[in-house]
Amino acid sequence: MKGKEIHGQVVKSLRFSRDIAIGNAIIDMYAKCGCLSNSRLVFKNMNDLSVVTWTTLISSYGVNGKGEESLILFEEMIAAGFKPNCVTFTAILSSCSHSGLIDQGRRIFNSMGSDFGIKPGIEHFACMVDLLGRFGHLEDALELVKNFPGEAAASVWGALLGACRIHKNMEIGEIAAYRLFELEACNSSNYIALSNIYESVGRWDNVRKLRSRMKELTLVKTPGLSCININDRVFRFFQGDVSLPQMKMAYETLDTMSKIMMLPQGYE
Image (cartoon, rainbow, N blue to C red):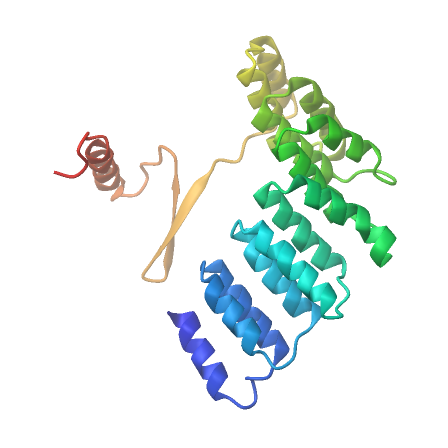
């Protein structure tokens, strides 16, 4: 609602209504709220377009799981005479990853250098590894990492490890994890990810060894938490936390809601 109010003020203002940066921000705002039709309408009514504007709209459709639409926009952008930049390729490859468009992602990745003279960077390799790994092409993802010019960054290996966790692939997961142990010696999440892979395949001896190693390195898993803002105060909630006086009431309410949701006929 606040975003619409601000958009209305922009439309009324002669000073800001033609500002490309503000238009891009409004497109992004509507997309993050899931209002893609509004994003497209703002894009259509903009007097001046830039590569950033096209990229913003491409990314907007991608993060909302509409990879096919992102690809259409990508082709329309090129046909309109705009040359994609590094950020554009990150956006379209990410869109392919969200929608499982493996062949299209490969084609675009390979076209970066041959058609546009852009050398794929770390973020592009990470997107491709995520795309291939997320949908089970772990061997291809590993080969891509190995072919990375120079030393692959932690983000690239991390994408591979995450994919191995999803698909319970211990062999490739170990390769990625032990490389990450070298690159990010103090990052406990990499140890946790490998431990989860070991658990999923029943390798409990490996789990115990890994947890023992974490203790030796004094690595502690950062607990997950939720935040809520009440009367300009931020309250943080950890699992099992009973420090706030209202927590007993909160847990009782959650327990009641859980029981209601488990009823065969729903609410009574």
